[in-house]
Length: 200
Length: 200
DNA sequence: GTCTATAGTGCGATAGAC
DNA sequence: GTCTATCGCACTATAGAC
Image 1 (tube, rainbow over the protein chains, first blue to last red):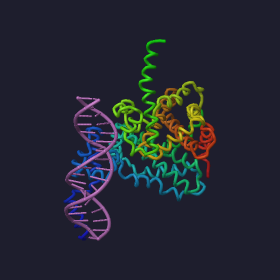
Image 2: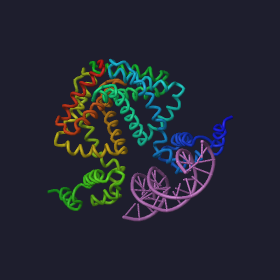
Image 3: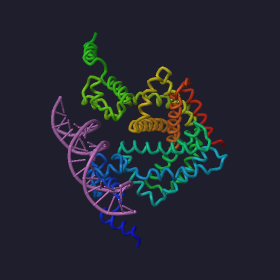
Image 4: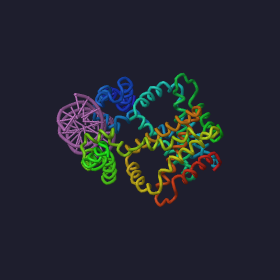
């Protein structure tokens, strides 16, 4: 057994587990049970065995604790864009990127996503933050397109359209009783987007 | 002259002008000069000759003061949707709605929009709120489409796409040195959106 | 119009890892 | 010595309750 492993075990006894993780779990639980406004940061910290001050070392504010791992999330969507075929249409590049990023959200992850989404939907403050995260994703997608030479405003239009499809598909995926995979729903949504210019 | 009119005049003398309006003007000025975080609600209220308590009677929070008149804004976009031709494509209906709502923003209004936008862009808290307002507009547009019988998810996809075009065009409209009208830029952006499926 | 809870910040101290 | 995670205390401002 290496010294590092021993150290980790010692730390886990002292700190039980990664503080950040514990804070996120405690927050989701408390926000679900009592609601966002009725939960204080002190309560979350206490439930995680930490202090209020430590909470704010990990998360800039009370909302942010629900949106952990945004960097990893964003990276799943953007990594493949640089290596897409050089002559591909902007919306096709974005389509592949959205599908690639969404593969992570398997059916096993659906219950957790559902719990998280319920909390977000119930609190405008969290909905706001969610929209900002989606805007950040759109920005990252647009950046990746521009790096490939796609000019403005096409890059932004394609990126934002991709995020729209993701959000619409996401909501459908989490709809009561749904059994279809997220990528499946997204494929259909991209087709419906293209069909929008046809007469109804 | 009715008693109500006399009362209104007396009140206007007593309050100098509409309090809500003065608070908005003072807030925009202070947010521009000092920044959002460095400005307290007490300072805004004082600049408007009112108390802190009165500020919160008019606006739910410190951000909301920048987003006055959202209802009127939203209505300009949604009113014409019900009377659009019955066989029109969803995205064409939305296109007309966005252009109709945008006509309000003439070149004379551009300087004010520019000042407002600069403050919003500089402060993530305000950007968040702006995104929520845009989401609200998208929701209203989708509602209007559904009322016409456009099914989901087409209604939401079309509405969200329209708001994407509006936002992209809005940014271009406020770009340094721009002389084109907002609706002009939007017309082009809708075409570019349709062209997104073509190979680049 | 006054009172109060709590979100969020600044600065400093402690303690362990390396 | 540095770096990182934690806690402690004092403080202000927002926002809501009374």
